[in-house]
Length: 271
Image 1 (cartoon, helix red, strand yellow):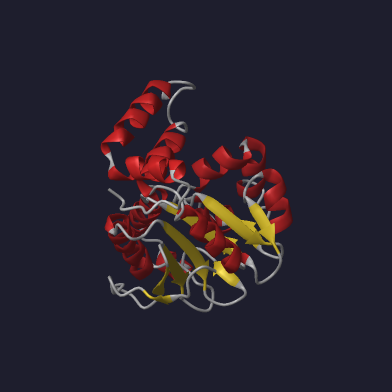
Image 2: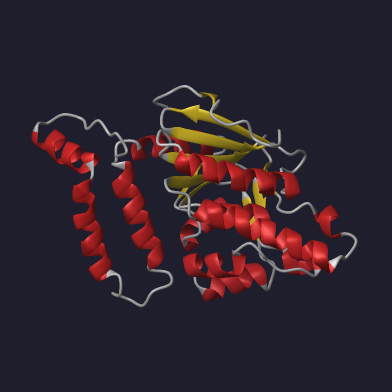
């Protein structure tokens, strides 16, 4: 790890169930809601506010998310929220999930989920909203909502099918199948599988690589890549060329090119 972790003092989260630290240009978010790191209204509000703040922080280029402890990344929604069967409350919670995880998906930098334990339901949907997923081989991943009469409401039906194809999405959602880290890598759900206890270090090393890239170029590239999900094939090629030209308005573009020609590391200003 290039930098030691230290508290992130630029924002005090609205809940102590989310712990934020910083290492260089990377923010580390730990879901700390024992025993299973579940999502509730406090953490969903808190995540939405945190993502908005980090997106506006010019010193943060990447965000790593992990669960507290060794057993759970996150077991998803706290089902106590739905015990009364209140439809109005269900609509509110579904909106909060969507608001929080869509903000995570659209974060200006790079997001990496360090899957260190069970990631089920809303826990897996949180990881699906990230750009990259690193999983320890022993983890269990699944979307078991239908087993309790519910369905994924935070992007799971859409993001999972996009990543792994319709067949595996149906196996995991319709059949309730859980998979471990090794199988998740094989089907394309995670980008790398590591040994137990290694997800965080691997994710932080990958996040550190982001700091060597121009943050403005990364932001533009991410928007174009994600745009391919909703636009017909080749329809963004003209936009890609225009964004390339737009980068020449930035200080970082001149810095990056000249640093390469002068054989030195670039000094990004995020401007």
